[in-house]
Length: 189
Image (cartoon, rainbow, N blue to C red):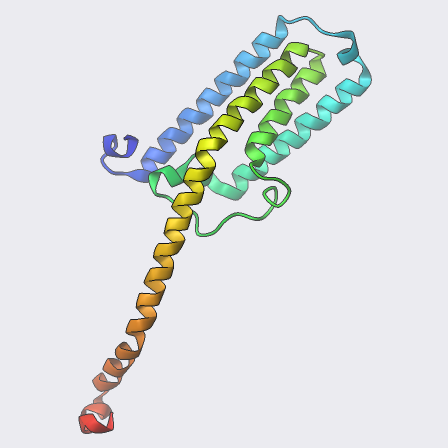
């Protein structure tokens, strides 16, 4: 695994994967734009309404993607949970309070927005393919993420129960260590 190759440094592994994913994403966007550039337009998609819809989709899509990245941070965005880097709690703030998987949907909206802005039907077809890829990815990602957070919650609950079971005896030990307590008989403590 990446963490083993990097000497057990899980944060470095996550940052390396994040840089790789980000770079491949830039390259993917470049290929998408190059593919659209040489594709024919369609008259219905050249209307002002399509251009406005494209601008709206692109704007909202980027809002969802960027606000997701902000809410999750680097390790939350770039699969930190695969490296054992878990968030303290589930993010429920914007945009996660508006939709599930806002990064995937926002990215798809951005692709559709660009296709509409330039009036390219091929871009809409590519957007559908992107949605299919994201759908397949989520079939693996969501169960994995749900499972590791459920295990982490169960472990935390088990540790909490163990700590509360130990707490009363720790109190009596602490009381016995107080100088005044040492002068009394054990029966009075």
